[in-house]
Image 1: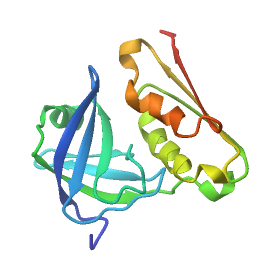
Image 2: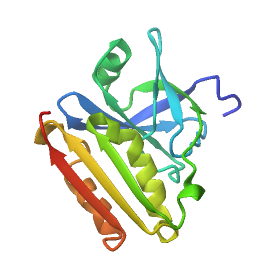
Image 3: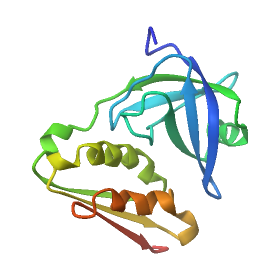
Image 4: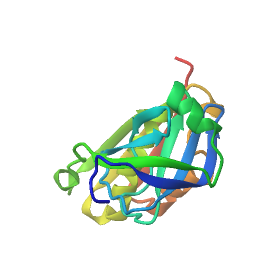
Length: 176
């Protein structure tokens, strides 16, 4: 991508329904788009506008990017109405990344809830890629109901199974 301020086209390869109002979009940008854990991108709906989202995929994945979107406004409502093979705009990445080197040789606690797990997923996947650099990762996640758990099923189970001696994942459900 020549300028991070100009959107490039991105094809929607896959749409994964996570909860009744949250979907993960697997996108393939026409031009390469790299990001680091903690940075964000802008998704553009032509003729409507754009909104910022933190990628939920691994920053080491170079061919595609995943963005998890909760339906809460005009841009996100249109995104939720799109189909696989549709095209949107994407630009970025922006913002400061997590200082992963500062976490080396330390125990790391990650806490998130609801759709707030999306930006933390990228952080987690970055940590898991080089888990030998960290003492331990404890990930605590909460949701209001079992139906509101994002990335449930195989994904959550596989996260802990990556390195069971170093990665510990806890889920809690509480209406609050």
